Image (cartoon, rainbow, N blue to C red; front, side):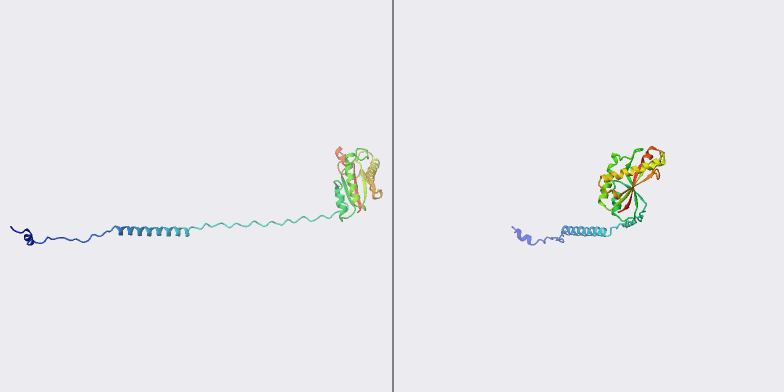
Length: 218
């Protein structure tokens, strides 16, 4: 019986095909994709930076400064006239005048000192005006004044002249009662002359029945 191992020694050798070793491409593909992603990210950042850097600048119109205010030049002072007439509100105007250096004489009209028709009595509602004048004259003991009484145009002119003097004397008496020396007070009559309002109406006649004072000395 033949040996099986010996018989096989004479058989031709088997041909074994050896092919090339397969390469694993997956890591390289992943690396390439990562590089592409990194490159794309860098380009995107650069684009945003350039867009932010080159953003258009909106020009702003310059604002003109507000014009400087034009200085207001006060009107020139008007020189006081020696014969000017001032209103006497509570005698404060006389006090201001006596404290100043304006020229003498100066005439003042009482703001509230009028008389009833054909009468020379001081009305009760006008007494405060005389009280204020007396207080001013006490502050300026060297001041001397002349009081002038007036009438409206009704009646005869001689009678109106007399009535005007009586009204001036009534004002003087009221000031003397307040303690003013009679030697500082003169009286005179203007009669129906120099009206300050029309004699055609009752209200105008009332305004003309008045008294004025003239400052003669400070």
